[in-house]
Image (cartoon, rainbow, N blue to C red):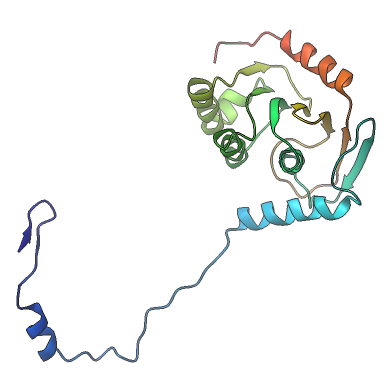
Length: 209
């Protein structure tokens, strides 16, 4: 018989030929080794470190939570931490720089319906210095309606409107991974989130994305 498209030919009497075939590789068996990529390892340990740092991982209205790290928790882990607790109706992410793997992680949350809408506010250098990441943001605009604003930005803010509570994440860290001491404050306060969202809403992008 033949698979014309693949150009494979199989003889009907293959079983007879196999009986006559002397296999000298019986002692050599196929092996498989499961390896977790360094990115996945870091992502896992970052989230684990954040969970371990909180006595009560469920955030409470009116409280602020102050975190200081030695680079063992990256900025995106805070967003994932909130996403484990509730559906996020709207998120504003402001950062000077951002890695493409982090953006794709946000996209996975959108696909799963955990984040309903997200807008990105990035630095003026983003288009040229992070061209791959910029292309992904343009695609997210087309596919999910995620807005991207380029302006003279160095702020690191995540303003989150959620089904159960609203919270603000203020951090010294960009949305990428770096082994530095960073400080972050999570504040559960709707008025503060609204104030920041209104501020970013009024910013005009250097160009249409």
